[in-house]
Amino acid sequence: MKKNFLLWTTILIASVSFAQDKTPTKFIRRNANTPEAQADLDAMNTAFKKMREMGCDKGLAWYYQGAIHNIPSVINGTNALCAQYQTSKDKLWAWGDCTHNSSQNASLNFLFWHRMYIWYLEKIVRDLSGKQDFALPYWNYGSTDVTNNVMAEAIRKKDGSLFETARWSILNAGQPIPTEQVDQIQLSLEELKTNPSFAGSAGFSKSLEIAPHGFMHDLIGGEYAEPAETYYNSIYQKDMSGLMANVPSAGFDPVFWLHHSMIDRIWESWDVSSYGQRPSLDDLKANPWPYEFIAPNGDKITYTMEEMYNVVFNLDYKYDSLLYGSSTPVLASNENKVKIAGALQDKKEQVVWEQKVGKVIGEDTFVHKVSNKFALSTSKSIKSKPNAKMILNLDVAVYKEPKDYYTIYLRYPGKKDQYVGLMTFFGVAHDHGTGENHEIGESGVKLKYSYYINDDLANTDANFEIILKKKGIGDAKVTLEKISVVQSN
Image 1 (spheres, rainbow, N blue to C red):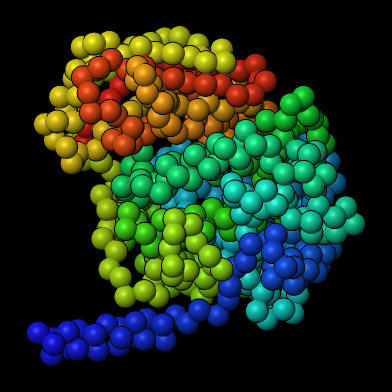
Image 2: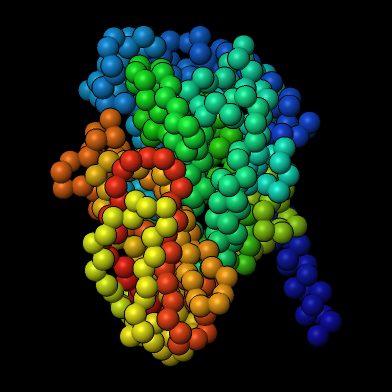
């Protein structure tokens, strides 16, 4: 037995050494609000100054890099920032490649594409700044430490190259994210921790994209400001919401990169946890996406799906710390840990019950009482297949992109409300091809929000309620068309 243990230990050490030799960790991404990150923020400021001075047709330019994420299909008036671009027919190579179009391909590639995107920006900053150990800092929002919920000072300096006026004014003023919004971020992070799958309508990737990803985009861009705020969006060249609140202008705000470094950190934290799973390469090849980036020397780089998959799980950086109690803040590729590829979608879904609603949920709190029959069906399904996944689906329709968000709870008599998730609307108009001005056609946009609720359902036959609590001062009507609970293996 002892010999077997020693042999296994030797193999394990060799395996770890090989993995680390293959992809050595060279760079550390740090919390932007720590002293250790200030040199990296200074380097970023130096690089962005040079990038802003470059012509927009240069691959390393601030405008070019922002446009790789996305760009408005039409600029209002003559484009003061890039004379070469006026409408979508003028797009340059790789512009508008981000994963925002509501397709399964986009959803599956969301985290992969953004990891590659910010990794290339990191390389560009490293080269232009001359700081050879530069790594992209992250904004550690949702922290219990209030100082971490303040936008980093370097991002707020009006004379710096990382400043942007079209943000929620309290953030640019150095105030922390309000407590109410911090609570929502913390709840969403905790819910993500135990998500049992990567893909699927209720999976980790889609849930993270909704919150805190979309939540923070809208928050930074001023959608949740009270009283309401309007800004001059320099990318659209008109008064509207801030850069970060709109998919086509988000990549032009330098805080975008710190935000997505945090999103990548959340993914990494979950990926190395016991819950983490990965879609297989075959899944990704069946749902391809363009992976095109600009190297620091200006070369155009295009990846096959195989090449991308290898790079994404063999990167050269780690985070200074991870969420979810991980004691090993390294990329999972550098651990001797086999990741099981999870199912692309939840298979063999069985409808437990569904109910048409057809009601506007614009009021502050919307309560849907689940009937005794449906409550019993839910309880029966749990008891018959205790290891199956229970998913709550909310089918909604919107006719204008909402500036609000909704928190979803399950409520049992005499018990504390169980948090289920957030409903946010970042990019709805853009993702569904309904125009640049948040205008949606008469037929509206149909959306489905899905949540795993195994941990939220009580072990009882008692009736329960589904609660939707609205936060915001937007006037867009959100219609709840149908509620359903499904069970999947």
